[in-house]
Amino acid sequence: MTASATESKEQLDAIPPAGGRISILLATTFPAPAPSTPTRWWLAVLAAVAAVAGSLGRVGGHGPFDTVWIEDAVLFLDQAINESWKDTVFRPHNGYWHIGPRTLTEVADLFPLAYVPAVMTILAAIMLSCFAFVAYYGSRAFFENKWLRLMIAASVLLVPVGQSQMQVDLATLHFPGLYAMFWLCFWRPVTRAGKIAAPLITTYLVFSSILNVLFAPLLLLRLVAVRDWATRLIALAYAAGMTLQLGGVVTGYNQRVSGEPNYNPILLLSEYVRVAMPRAFFGEYWAGYNTIRPHWTWVVAAVLVVLAVLWVAVRGLSRPAWPLAAVALVLSVVNFATQVGSMGWIEPRYVAVPALLLYVAVLALIRPHSGTSAWAPAGRVATVAVISFTLLLGSVFITNYRSDSSRSTGPSWQSAMHDADVACNADPNLTSHRWAYIWWYVNFPCKDFRP
Image (spheres, rainbow, N blue to C red):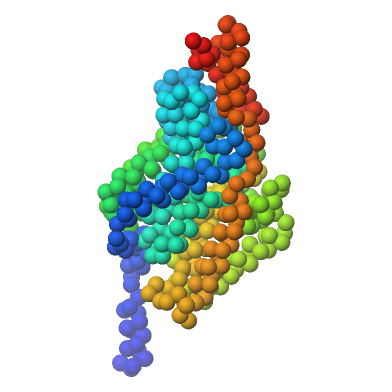
């Protein structure tokens, strides 16, 4: 046998069979986290307090403790204070159940009425911090660098889009919750606390939104690739929630009111490039609050960012996590297309989850080489790319940290209670007083204002 023939045979023998290649791909997609020192409990507490405080600080106007808005008011709170929990927690609305936020509202209703909005907002901020922790620990297997994991976690608290419609409220928690569900599909907890938290958070998420159905293929792959009890418990919680959500739709028990659906794939993909990408990379302050479609210059800039990232990855100047990047990008597009296609138009909040997943895809592609000095020739370009993207996102997060919404410009809860107090005590026959602002309202029971 000639030398060239021998080399060819060795090369063929080095190629794993089809089943082996699939196993390697699955192992690369769902890697086990490298051993690390446990996080000190006081650092975790400080991080949680900072995350909650950072979220609460985004609400302007009368502040997070003296305002309530959108479905938090007209749906969850109004029903919680006027009906029994058995009649509200398991009540669907617009196509799916909201058992998670309704349960948290019932917890808030245990407090005096004057403090209920504050408690609801604090609970929402705590849940956001939980989502951030899931992102931080769920990404550890892919990113050894704590700074990159911190960016991935902080983005859920500082997302620079959709704040005109989602500001630390229970009703819109399912949007950042979808980002947490993405990382729950990858997170392989090693501590007892993590193994308990992962299925509990999964339970909250899937019993709160039907959109988690988009992660079914990813979780099925996780079940094939990883066979441990944490995976099985996450999958069991997911299956229970999705059975309830989809069962309501299939049986017709849950009816969804939508616009004019348009699932033209070319249109939806073009809207993703035209709307989601520039608003994700440059935020609403720069891309424009008054129009959903940014100026074409921002679109070109966003495309250039993507091309630069791909150039770094394809040229081997970084250590791209291709499976993670591909999954994040596909789900970013699919999430955007699902929301926009089902309604037929784009809302600012529809960009939030696609933006978060787009950040993951970018960071996965420009991931620096491990074991290499940041400024060594082999890692210099990736380091510059990471620093540049960090500066870009940091500027966008700071610029869009606090933005106007109908919550920040609306009336205070204390003034609403004062009006209810006056109205109820002026008319002894009055059973309730309705406080309304824009399209939401709360019916105050007069019995709560009389001796």
